[in-house]
Image: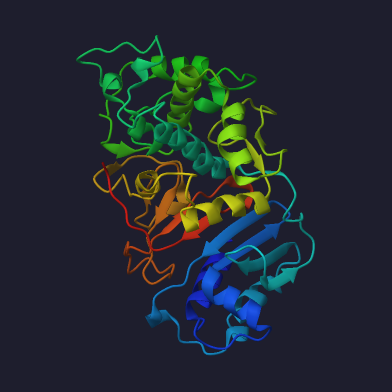
Length: 362
């Protein structure tokens, strides 16, 4: 799948966005103004890839009809993969090719792509004043006892959302099995890390533990379940399909991996981030989300093999990929302002946001 993603990135970046685009003048204006959304659909995979116009140095192909030749070549080798590419406004198709695949409207499990939306729910609560990134679990979870020499006492919400809390022991998948009780799962994670050796913020560990604790804090503070928060803070505000939900089957509710959503609905979410839609998140929250929080953290075991050889960072609930000029060439890695934000999940669901962002850490 990385080959497909790399091809689309390179093809789109080579497109001369000042060149004439075949079709109506209306569609031409839409393509030039709105950026691009690509949806990859395979038997076990859906990839949502919104792309914003790259720098002028990359726009060298005067013929927009040729930028997808590499993608067509790759697709010709795989009958079970489909690619659908539309503009950032969501109302025009630029490219469509493929055979057998679920439709973009199908509600599917997206595994770790759940993390981005879960982190967004928590950030919206921060925006609302219900939570703060400085909050410690002990403020909401009565079993979390503050103690001067206990590294767990230093964990803050910002560490949980950036996966740098140091809570590496235990397992969110095991303690959530067959249960929707996230505070109880958070307690098991707390107890499993009684001898925590890594100070919060020191290293990144890719695990579902962090978001279980973060959501347990959110549920306890608001008195509402994760799915209720999803409904009021995301689904209703963005007009997503009512069937979007966190599933408790077959392994129990998991804020990091049990979201059920369609490519179309996830695309709406990504376009909201791409445009920094007013009223969904504050400008400060958008900046905090897209900040690489792990730049000063050591890289501990991540359980994410696809970052090996790539100096990726982590924001709040998603990866910040670092490539040189939209290339997957690991020999020249850079993290420019136009960094690539993603939250790849098992089953091939790969949402990616590429945009020029201004970030900061409070």
